[in-house]
Length: 565
Image: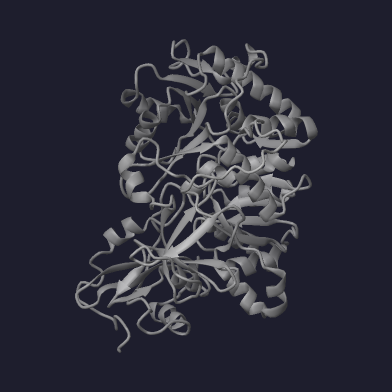
């Protein structure tokens, strides 16, 4: 099917095709069907509290009524500068209930980029957590004068903000408002939410998600992870990042219990791990940057908790086999590798083992397959193309750029025609910038980012595969592989390794471990030991920064470069 051509209308249906699939309806119906299902949330003071769907729906309606009384309505945008807490969860549904679009603000962005996102998106009302008011003050001079602030706090507004004409309390807004009665019946093609990309080059680009796309994506997540009302879902991914990978919506779609950990950082390993156990969590989205410290924490416990129903939906980077095996061994927990991006809502593929393969593959082969990004989910089209844009057939030697199209894949960037022109082909496929292939069995495998793959003597070397094997080496806590300039071979890989505490791993030992798995020309020329690795605002390795810092690491020339003919 070619979506570039106009669809053909056959016999008209007798269905309610004019019923709009909106996120507001999603929660309304969930509150009706699962009114007493729990939402457990952690306050800024660290206290855990419990509410339910019915009570939360009433608060959402009051928030919507309060926003409407301030003039917020269809076509407006409301920025959210919040942690993973109850108020953020409420705004996911309350803001679109007014007809407005919620704009997720990445609180880890540099202030100039954050100010750009607010200005470019047109957000004039911003809901901000009280702990983030210093950031709001820094942003203030760079924002339009008519910007309005709604402060999320359990207490009174700080003295410097109290009494300001442009500021009010979130809880006061709820207290003074009755549940909204005249919410607009929004067209499902309207944008319910928006996120901006956090790439390391250029300005952030806006992706505006329709109600329809969000609804369809929610049920795709639930179907491909086996989520039901018996699950307890903990939102571990920042809720400002790609709409928390769609998990807030998927949870509500099936009436699952929800756990909101509030304010946390990547260093709060003990808090997050113990919270998983305390609340008997069964589903959580998390990147390897969160999961690896969790695994190390669990390994240090005298008695490891057993959570056989726990499934981690893992993305951002490929999870090492050692990480997946570690959680399986220690807790009986499963790591489900998935793939996507801000532009794709984000789920494109989910790695589940097809029954026929389970019967045919050995245990080691099954573990190796779990590294793949997985099976493309129903509703999404993926093609792999060569440098001329021609589709490549399945097969591990047919590596090219991965391109994606579907009902929850963006077709353009918000008010950015230049980026849109570069980012999509004539058939509406988004250019992912990832290099990979489709296996004969239909599993997508990403080799690297096009900008991160190491080009040595005319051959490509996957930094991801090298990194993941390094993480299986005893004594390695974190690893990054980047290509740096080489006088003979154009580029050669170097490895940057963070040792585990007390480890005395040497460069020679690390190279030997890689040499047992990879050809000599693929092994990094240097293994450098560092205290920490630079990461982006969403926890990914900042390879642009690492390439800059270590650009002269091989200035004298070293290494075999590429295989001989």
